[in-house]
Amino acid sequence: MKYGIFIYQAPPMLGRNVMVDNYAFTDFSFMGIGKGKKFLEKLQKELVQLDYPVSIVKDDTEANLEEIIARHYDFIICVPGLQNKLLSNDKLPQIFHIDSEDYYSSLISKTITNIKNNVL
Image 1: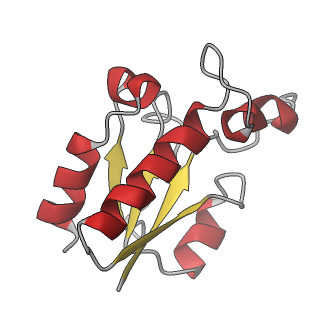
Image 2 (image 1 turned 180 degrees about the vertical axis):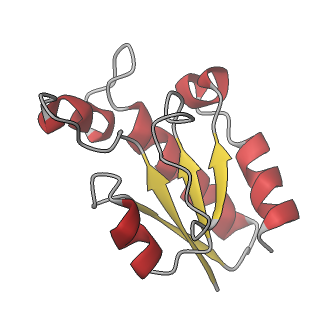
């Protein structure tokens, strides 16, 4: 079994309200609100249907890379906008970045292909 983590918010920074980023996992869906939840649920459902030995969890660390590394995930999936927010670290597992169109439309085919070709 391979394990991944879905990072949907940037690491905390001085002066930034962390609660602002939690809108991605609300049940309400409008103009980006709730998109993270919808994308992750669709991805998890498709992985089960394809019978891939992969489990992906929602990030509960607020993108704390040290904690993510300590948990030994096999890969990381990042929402759009995090390409330059996560500091480079050679101890990080494989990172997949979702493009904006796929994220906001909940198109998971590229992410499934990345998992199939690079993780399994």
